[in-house]
Amino acid sequence: MALAGDELGNTLFPGKPAVRCSPGGWKSARLIIFVEMAEQFAFYGISSNLITYLTGPLGESTAAAAVKINTWSGTVSFLPLLWGFVADSFLGRFRTIIIASLLYILGLGLLSFSAMVPSPPQDSNQLQVTLFFVSLYLIALGEGGYTPCLKVFGADQFVGNDLEKSKAKSSFFNWLVFGSCVSILSTRLVSNYIQENLSWSLGFGIPGASMLLALVLFLLGTKTYRFTTERGGNKNPFARIIHVYMEAIKNRRQPDLDLANPNETLLLLAHQGSKQFRFLDRAAISCDLAEIEKAKAVLKLVPIWMSCLVYAVVCSQPYTFFTKQGSIMNRSVSPGFLVPAATLQCVTSIIMVAFIPIYDRLLVPIARSLTQNHLGITMLQRIGTGIFLSILAMVVAALVETKRLQTAQDDVKMSVWWLAPQYAIYGISYVFTLIGLHEFSYDQVPSELRSIGMALNASIYGVGHFLSSFMISVIDKVTRQSCQTSWFDNDLNKAHLDYFYWLLAFVSSICFASYLWFAKSYVYNRPTTF
Image (cartoon, rainbow, N blue to C red):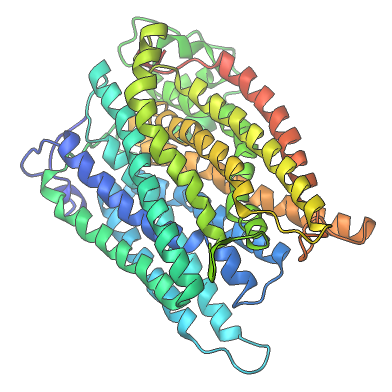
């Protein structure tokens, strides 16, 4: 049952009834977009330049720093699974956002403090390193609860499954990412410059102030939000889905049951989906048909999830090796002024800021007229387009790095702007795949599990970051032993990042083929998404 009202009565004061109904809609959604902008300014203000801080003030090697960043990034992307379960089963999205925000702010404050700790004259700076990583994982804990719940909470401001609401939700995700890109661009220009040229402590402190602003803005909109509460029984929704899987396993020796009854009013999902994963029908002995359909809806996301993992590995590179490449290239734009290496990530943000309005206001209406699909192209087509472009970005990155290595042999530094094409293609790829996955994760899961659905989306990047760490560690060890020089040698002029990029392009092509196979056979849960 969907209720429009103030969740404060249900979340902050359990057992009390919800108070006055509120409008929600674009009035609330716009405020949430501004909240997201403030949070993204904070997150990317510290994450986009970690490779420079670790290899600079903290004295890490390039490979070790990349592994630690990918491990942290993977943790950031995995924690939403835990928070999504907590939000959907116990706390609710509103209260989860507040608690996660407080942890987030605490972590950012401690991070700024850690940068102020003076390094001893000896090589050991253990206190500073310990404080740094404690604060970094506090930030990960806060980000893990904040990200999935805020996105779902924003989309929940558009209640209903009619075409107009579906269009509004799709547009919301477009403009949410647009706002994020504006903030990311701003923080890369401001925070990264301050960190490298003025003070790391101040450069980490400004993102902390931005996160505090995000919490204040979010609380200011409390009386205008629409809170959607989904209930389907006394058990929490996650437990009900798990119960279906357990009952299907317990009854695995039972014959298949024909439960695909189009007249069954309890079924919440489309009839076409009922014929998939028929083994779950065995749970009908003790489970409701509606719960079985929800369990099927969650299970059929798994092949799509798995085929997107290598795309997430590609997404790890702009914040590690792309940035490290830029640090040894010619970054001079005028005498005495060097462009911070991480600032080149702004190319991605600029491309996204320019492309999202074009996509939302021009390309989608044109596509609607051609395909008769209210979204322009389907969500899976959008995701697939982005994956293909990410492969192209890796090919371009490999070619540019090969050229850079050739010029380095002649003691010539290539201009850092040679990296712009790979950042630009990656930015367009991100518009397609990131937003497509947001929509897909929100639309294709049972409504009471949407926080977990968005967390599953984030976990794609989490697994991708861990896979990237694993690949780097293995390749670094193997190439160091067999070739004497690692592909990720600290001296990038002796390294071979180009080989690594070609490897990613090859593996991504294989995964893209598997994605096309799974996407072709996927049956959407709701007819409006065809």
